[in-house]
Image 1 (cartoon, rainbow, N blue to C red):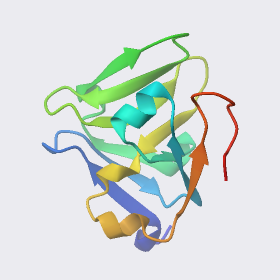
Image 2: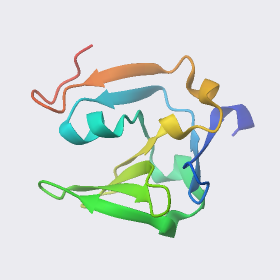
Image 3: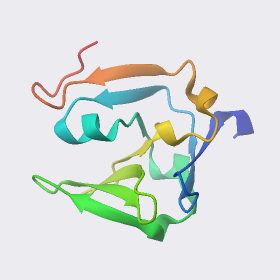
Length: 121
């Protein structure tokens, strides 16, 4: 895949780094966790994203039904990704893009995770 299709991201301290193929859309969710994290979630099958370093340097946080774990850097606290607990579903926080312009032009969908579990756009 061409390098311009890849977005490289890192937490504030640089301990966790990952690379993801540019997704067709990002999700902004208004559930109680996501709105506090301020994340823009880029979904990716495992073959389209990889950790460059620090995969084992994240700390999972499971809440509610414990169906997914939000991961944050153990050093600086940046939320890096979430991982499904029963499947391979996962999403990465693309607000951590090393070059913020890398996400320019990607459609941002508004997801109502607080109430209806539907897209609002």
